Amino acid sequence: MTSQHDPGPGSATPPHEPELTGPEWTTTPVTADLLRGALDLEHTERGLLPHRLPAWARAQCADEQLASVEAQPSGVRLVFRTRATAVELDTLRTKTTYEGAPPRPDGVYDLLVDGRLTAQARGAGGDTVVVDLTTGSKEERPGPVGTVRFPGLPDRMKNVEIWLPHNEQTRLVELRTDAPVEAVPDDGRRVWLHHGSSISHGSDAASPTTIWPAVAASLGGAELINLGLGGSAMLDPSTARAMRDTPADLISVKIGINLVNGDVMRLRAFTPAVHGFLDTIREGHPTLPLLVVSPILCPMHEDTPGPTAPDLSDLGEGKIRFVATGDPAERALGKLTLNVVREELARIVKQRATDDPNLYYLDGRDLYGDADFAELPLPDQLHPDAPAHRRIGERFAALAFGTGRPFADGRA
Image (cartoon, rainbow, N blue to C red; front, side):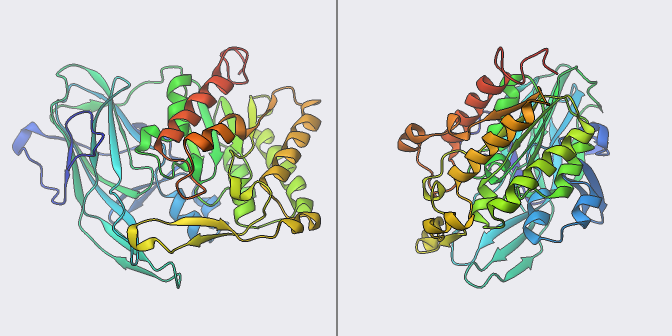
């Protein structure tokens, strides 16, 4: 079954038996030289699991939310050269659903040929985690391997990219093609390492290449490593060390919304935590362009602290909304709001930039502000929808990669 916005052929079916048989198929082991966007690969009994944080970083934080989202391959893609006209990929996904709500849409695979979106397909089969939002309990239901098929590709040598679903943990079981494949050599594009929250992860985007960082990377001509971690942009020292140790040419960190909606720290702790996070990144990348991005507009938290709580009144219709439960008066006690965060981030960057000329600040409201909220409101009061992802990505590309901007060619 293909997605509604499918531009070409592609399908996914639960059985993982190839449509063709015999010597016409070439099976290629999925190895690190065929994968981009992952910082670690875990060999499991049920397939190869890409991780977006290294094993040592995962071991330092036992949080279930972080463990779930870092194993969702946002920005992770298979990249290879081939003459193949048909590609099959066996995967074992883990899909999350909510008790009492309609099933969530299946994750989308985007297939690009020579950089152009050519086909899409939705996943099938796999394991399911059923979450009861009223109690927090989870039930795991095992399922079979599924196969994503992309027939009808042009019969010529070409670069093929398969972007994995940004919102489903995905084990890679087997790659089959009707012609041999080879790794794509480095084309000299700069590597952009980005860290952020669920918005950077891609919540409510239509497909993996339409999350805003992927849109911006495409427009900016950069290779994306996306450390957008839903609900988990908490200024974790382990994440900073992972960024420190990851080869890159351009770096950005989007800070704030998770700290507010998680109500995890006060201003007293926030300021030194930001300094420490930036210090750690600078240990490994002392002179690279480093862009600090404050939160996009989120009206419920502009002047009201967290924590954020789900509104389940329309759960039966598949809708979850969020509400801010903090008291605005608590700002006087150091509670964080988005306006407090933006003001402090701007001050920190200005202070540090006197000794760090390659450090920059971008107000998130320049990516999505009041006028955008009026035109493209946040459906759940927290996350942008698919058109807003496109807009944010286009604006980031202009403000970061444009002429004279922090990520413009020649700055690295």
